Image (cartoon, rainbow, N blue to C red; front, side, top):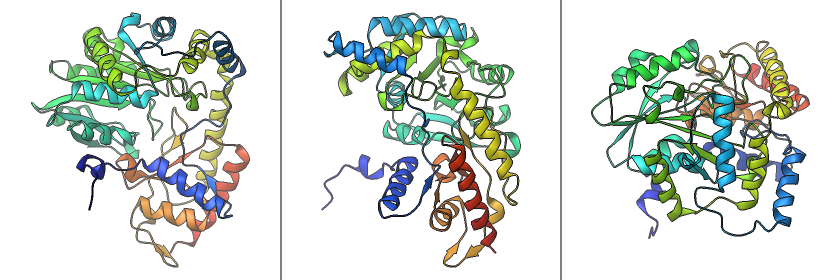
Length: 397
């Protein structure tokens, strides 16, 4: 008998986490697996941030924190928005959560009722659709392709809007494509959504600091729609603090209060020590940590040059984040041994078995014509991984 709820039975496991687990299991069995699947900087957290955490322990910050976060951290986030983004958010408009994922869930559960529609350009981050469906919402996807740098046309966004549309959600820089929306592109999106007063915009800016080809622009910069924009960000990617689990959101006071209320019934305040570490990070000029971006840029260019030597796949030049999302349709219909490639999932499983390189199927991101590889690992491993992939792909006939 199945005692589990319909909700959890219908919930899909995160594909990135599933592939990482499979890779670990194969490694434990003695296989030499190179993992390009997880979206995690391979750097350790900077020492000054770690020292701030140690100091917080010594000072006794070991009790329950406020649900929305310590006031000094929310003040630092407010100042960060002004300093780096020229945006004015008061501390009471900010809610600190256990990672950006919880911030997104807080927003969705605070805004979405069963039957509400949420527009999502695809490819998209894996958890968007699952969180929306948990809230009873209906994801409405706008497919894009490598030919358009994975950006939706304004006409497609306009066509996706219905009387049931409640939210538009996107990321820039984008996971999994590395796409960055320019100020003009964001303004065009804002102008399409502006006349529809019931539509909110969730702007996921977690990769803000990992950009190579353009400046970061937030859709919240436009006064005519700012009150309907919710920004989600965090310290995981830009500060190499994935394990600290600190994210935050900023919005109009009504939405911020709703997220505080929602969080109060699920987890209450985020980890007190991690908050103090994040205070140090967000109070410091990010250029002190800019060496990480420079290394990511070098790795990106290395992988792109090696990929260019392998015939068959199409890819954009990611302007941010640390992923490449190649179109692999030219391999569909080909096979080697027991493996026949019909989609991105098949190709990922083949490369895991034959090349001993793990990546994530594009199906998890809404596009099974592609696969995602992360270059957040050493140059040595990236070179070896691309060498193996080249050999394995050449076997497909």
